[in-house]
Length: 255
Picture 1 (cartoon, rainbow, N blue to C red):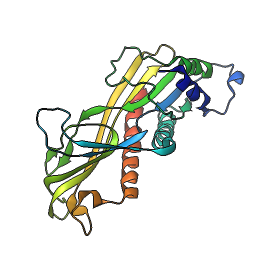
Picture 2 (cartoon, rainbow, N blue to C red):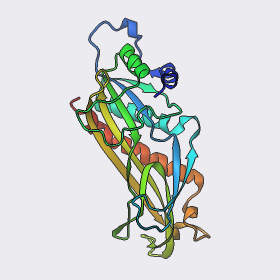
Picture 3 (cartoon, rainbow, N blue to C red):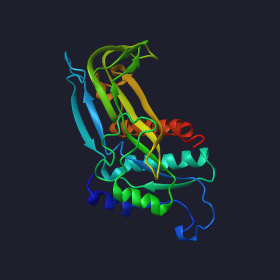
Picture 4 (cartoon, one colour):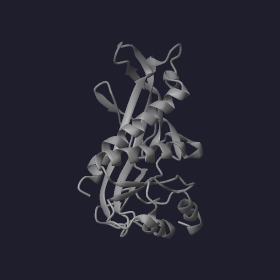
């Protein structure tokens, strides 16, 4: 990671405590720095039949999320979750940047050491952070629950939507049959590390999905029309924040 990029990060480190650093002379409570690089973009994955490849032959389209909106939502949600699970803890939020600071953080091992960028490490030391909470993209097999079975093909990562125009499906509430389905997915990893040493203390992969038969679409049999674009973003945002709320209490317990 180039230092020039992390210099921008240091300038956008947000202090969410009411006390100036210089005034803190008494022993400090636990202090968490929080950073998300899960949702700089959202993927639209379109199922295509393929053989011989674990990744599958799916078409993938990436949609950039302007102004780091979803990653900002993620760290704000994490802040509330930490404050609820660990009353008295200080929480610092790191604003989104235009690239990954931890691009190889796919399957970290507890006890291993994170490579924290130099400028970020200096900022964490200056702010007195005891812990670093990271939200990063997680890659795993596509898997959606439908009709007492699991469907989906290829692999997914981060946040996005999955579109299948070929698989026969049934709407669960009306039992209306159709062809194809639309799904949203949230695949990320939450990692807690010591802010000084970079040692990984705890880490948890998160996978959440929701599939909708094309029969949900009004006046259409195109699964993409199951909901409006605004509804798609809302469903994805709610799923993302709900999963953050679920994973953080166990992650920071006794730490």
